[in-house]
Image 1 (cartoon, rainbow, N blue to C red):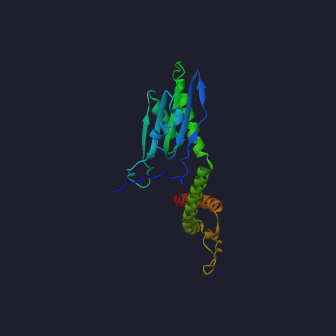
Image 2: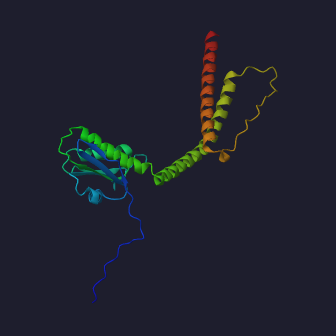
Image 3: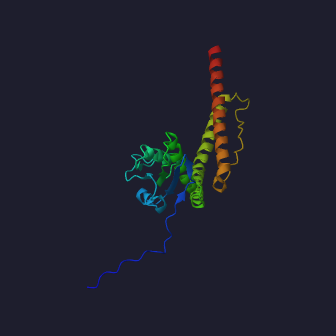
Length: 244
């Protein structure tokens, strides 16, 4: 049997994109971070330019295989970190991923310069990690993704308002009728009936989100005002009854 031929690398796929921070130098110690949304922490640690680093501190945050108990709960994530000899460094890097609310991996390389820096080294570690992660968040690709998500959320909210605004209109109509009863006075002509012209209801389906939100606020304010007037009428009615 002829030996199997080894598979050649797939050059059709672009290499995974990474985001690199600016370097920080403090008393001959140097710090630099690389973030990737797809590469593992171990892959980032193997970055050739980091091979000479004294410490290659990593943290990863990925979606958990566990599911929230309730659909309304926030998604679950699994976070891991590696100090690589810089005690508490991994935890500091992991906190940045949590603060930025991003998934992926980040490595912060430190080249020790011979002078102990004290706690300020953690500021440098987190600053580099934050800059690398922020470059990802501000990338054109992520801005497009963010816009798509915002548009989807806006459309979901718009559909919700299209559903609830007619319910608000119905509530206002019922409350106005109740208020009219509370404020009514005996009519000299019992056969005379006054009908209010029905308010023109806009076609909610044709409206964009902003006007719908304005209408929701207006409807809520109207309901609040009518309820206050009903309460006043009931107090006045009770006072008149007590006086009589």
